[in-house]
Image (tube, rainbow, N blue to C red; front, side, top):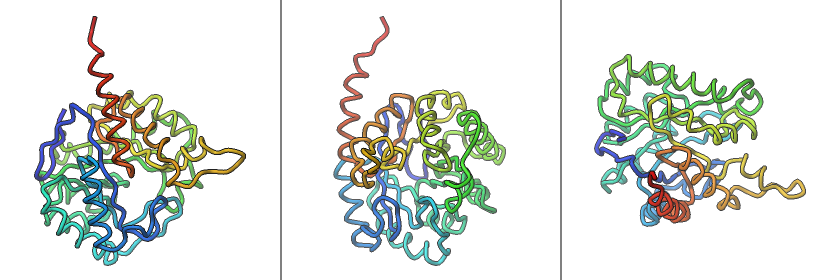
Length: 284
């Protein structure tokens, strides 16, 4: 299985690690730490040194309750980073739902568009179809970031997520988008309860029936914090490192081709152990 992107044809026969670069003052996990350009670039360089295969940069927080960011603000945050990072000759992904931002970063040779709205904003599908070569990640989200945790999903979460991702992927295929450009993300934490998130993890392999590779984004999510809580005390996002790495390995073991993480070094090391074990699993 391969993932075709603007400049790279990524081999998914072994799981890839996507390192998160938040250029935001209000991210749930590391808001404000890398909002300035030099800090973001230094952080990205460190992620690559730690073993990241892909860098995923975002200028707008999608944490629960987040207010929308203006187009001008998002471009001002993202474009200076992109203009420098594309020179590093590593796959660069941009986390955005605005078609204008998509077009602007694709014009600067960004490799992947990672959209929590799964290209449902007017004009987004046309930008991707018109580009002809970038990779795309389509994510399931219930509602929008401002309301998703107050209007959560009901029913069989896997059936609903699968139906949504099937519809969105078929919409792109109908526009002539190459199937090898697509990756699907079940959207852990985006309008789902704790139980629903873990149901998606337990049954994640069923989503492979859709015929596309999967991305899993468990890093520092609130569901992990709730599982770790002791006497009602929920650890802060930065204190969920071990749980995040465990969830990433479990997701890979259930078929995820890409894991989106904050803690790159630790995830890379854990996946080396997983690979060593997997190499011994041969048919009798």
